[in-house]
Amino acid sequence: MGARIVFGLLVLAAAAAAQPRAEGLPRIAAGTFLVAARGLPDPNFSETVVLLTQRDKSGVMGLIVNRPARVRLARAFPDFAHVKGADEPLYTGGPVGPSGIVALLRSAAPPGGALRVFADIHLVNTAEILERLIAPGVDPAKLRIFAGYSGWGPGQLEREISLGSWQVFPARAGEVFDGDPLTLWDRLIEKSERQIASTFEARPSGARADPASPADPVRDATDCPVPARTSSPDAAGARAGPPGWTLSRWGGSTACASPIDPAACGSLRWR
Image (cartoon, rainbow, N blue to C red; front, side, top):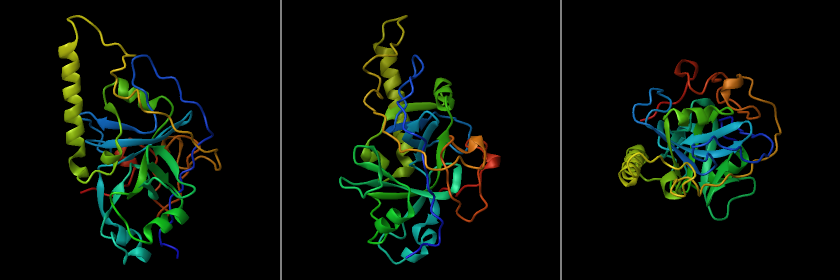
């Protein structure tokens, strides 16, 4: 049974060791949450929580987990409109390649071809696997489907973190599949602010934070291996995601030229 959507295929670059991070910056790895700082002006990422799914020497990929779109799965996958959970929303994963489809699966026994992100969370990026997962019904506590993704080139995300655009936390599986995603950012940003306040209260006057401190909340996040490159870079341009990642089009005409320029990207609207 073929769905009418051309599914997105995200192919990541050749496996590489984690890049060394700049002194004082938190570790950036698969299984990490990026929580947008208050007042972040970019509408693509304002008040978002991004799960980093993969990283290699070409850059970083992630999915926004707290932006359910107005589009329902029954509309996006008309061949599966009859299945349980078809009224669940599609999620807006990011401004890059909004015509592509990818999914997050929570399972202790994932199907072959699913890519582990952390714990029991896996990335599904092929039509065949996704159709098999949707056919028996969609449980939103175990499967969420995204249009588009978020991508940063080498050093780009590190610069944004150093400028204070993001707070960094280890992700938790329950938060990735949170039952109230529209309030997730509020809860995590408040948690971040409490941690920052307690750090300053506990620090002796004039003392500086130790960048290598074990209290850093992201030290337990681990990089996950990535598959070998099997296709050429996205034709939309260098800013359409790190080199080596490609995305087939949904509708064929909505290529996104920049992950941060809202004028360059067409994306689904969130609620």
